[in-house]
Length: 299
Image 1 (spheres, rainbow, N blue to C red):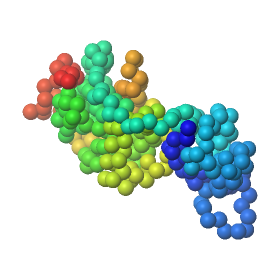
Image 2 (image 1 turned 180 degrees about the vertical axis):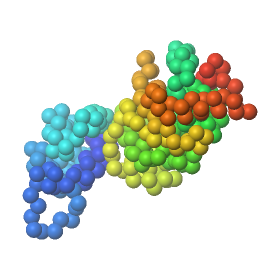
Image 3 (image 1 turned 90 degrees about the horizontal axis):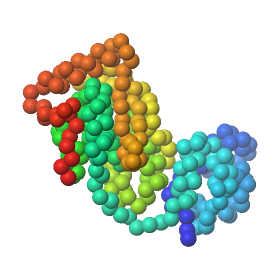
Image 4 (image 1 turned 45 degrees about the vertical axis):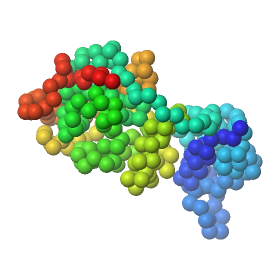
């Protein structure tokens, strides 16, 4: 059975991005027609035949062994996340796209969100759909969006779509390019684990058509799980504040992740966040938040 084409795309992207001098390849005087490593150069570094590697890139090779994959990962200078992604791609076999059911939020997860109180929190599904948020999380990241939207599976905001297509979200991150690379890198990792997810394929197709920036980042095949980082936000109500964003996997539903946002104690950012909580809770017409504002599951 042929190896999935995603594996070949990943190998080509990483090979093209690796400069010969970084891989220890001595370039000759002849002008190179490719910017990265040639296939035969990578094959030699990995200790495999050039013909075998070519078949692997073209999706015609059968069952690349873990040892061969590790050798390719070493030659390509992949980090631990990229190495794991390479093995995941090689283990996958082509399947028909399937449309999975809408993701649901358990009562225990909603209780966890409620218990977070004033800590901004957003619950994301595997495709970065917003499944739920509390009041502070909504006010910090998407106060311009209907608070109850996550209740309706068809209307759920998608943070990746917002980051590339929504003007408010694009303006929110001072270093939006770094955030965009992280989000796309994380989505790439998810696509490797769920190549048959038709909803994810549709999202990638939509954003690739609507955003040249997304298309370029997607084709680069970088892998970067969204785990923890610090970002400077420029909020339209309270100005600049620096927040730490940490992503936690939800127990029993590993495809769902809880994003928590914190500020340094005693900082101007902490004061800005406190002001935002007060301002947003006092806004006329804002959707009433049950308890601390976790939307109910109406599906």
